[in-house]
Length: 382
Image 1 (cartoon, helix red, strand yellow):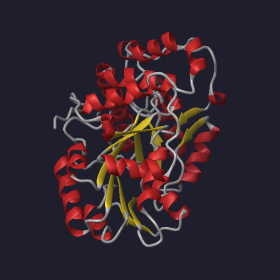
Image 2 (spheres, rainbow, N blue to C red; image 1 turned 135 degrees about the horizontal axis):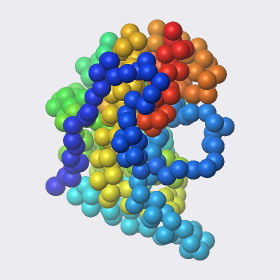
Image 3 (spheres, one colour; image 1 turned 135 degrees about the vertical axis):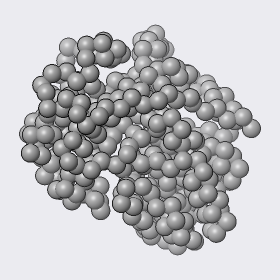
Image 4 (cartoon, rainbow, N blue to C red; image 1 turned 90 degrees about the horizontal axis):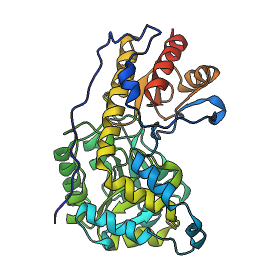
């Protein structure tokens, strides 16, 4: 079955002497002119810079914004059977070269994560997850009384695949976030395939959930989608979100890809919500606008490289990240750093146990935001 994969172009990096100490623009006028974000007159979030939720700092692409404008009309009053939702399912299927029954829509990825845990975990069917990783699946498992087996990431912040495979014996579900949130690290296709085949061989009743929410931010060649494995194995599925690189977090659209019976079990265990008309048309447009996604990846990569270089210049360790956030060893509790930054009207990420006393996750904002934020970080950490 034909699988569509996105092409990527090289990341532009910044060296440690990229001028982080100066008060001038670090990107230059031409770079600022390239931004696709429209100016707004209002001040949002009480003037606090939001570097805590991993949303796109640039929002939807121009084509998506135009699609939203053109579809905002009286037709939205006929929303009980919203237009474009079935079309979205078909567009996703066509995009990946699969059938519509291999696609499950959700209002963001949250219900997909919750549904998978409720479908496959129980008091005698544990969940296996890295620590730290995105917490929704683990939190849901604890809520329903399922055992949680957490496997610490290694010294570089990478998921311990051997440890995860060993912990998977007899488990109901393995949650594998790739690239991982919050560490930003990634595993390539060979490592992922080896891990999945090992779990399928050693614990055939276990489901493997590959969360690819950040795949569009990965550097070229760093990883491939695990969709071929999901089409090969009934016990493997992947999830994606339009909340990150596609820039429509507020419209709440996500989806899972896998075999029909697996997706049916997830959808039957928990409500997926109702994708609305504007969310559907925005998602259709955003998925097809591969030019904008590539621009978004490059833009994020440049700003991320600048921010990582600044922290390393200050003497702090940062994992090699493939996401729109970084995970920094600030050598102090994240709560202290967060409180100090908030006094300067910058909000950074929440605690991520068990590394909350040493590390902090920082989302990548716009060029202008990160120029300002780096100066604040220097002051706070001085």
